[in-house]
Image 1 (cartoon, one colour):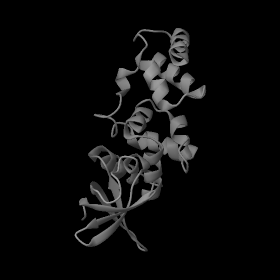
Image 2: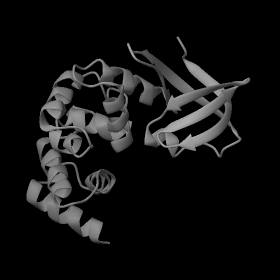
Image 3: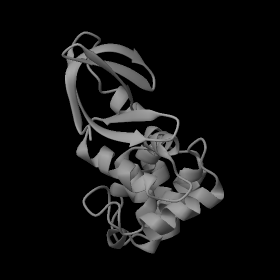
Image 4: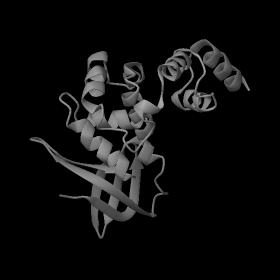
Length: 190
């Protein structure tokens, strides 16, 4: 029903913003990835939206990119994942990181998001496989088993997704697991 809002940003109270569109103020829930990219209060803003009607509420969710909105739509189709959980997932990890986790079937990365348990993470992996990440993030066939193991090891050692992915990109494609981990740790130590 409401696909896009363009207006003046009146308030920023994470995760909610208030957008004035010609005298009508819309309260919009946004993921933190969108929130961090918003302009200052009083400036013009454009958000793609998803309007959700429930028995007890009518809610508007806003996104800074088409990919975020499409991912949100895919997430809320999954049984047990409502709009609030989908927003938490998008706030906890970017679309590219989520696509990578789905492609590599890494439930451990999803469980790190508040509100996502092991069963929900496994359901997300199962139901989103092949639906998410075709154009975003890395493709499953582009990563071999050794690279997936190296990535898992770096995450287990406490490195965040961005650091681990950057170290993985710097490695040769045919590197073994143990050599790859050593090389990645050396590059991360710099």
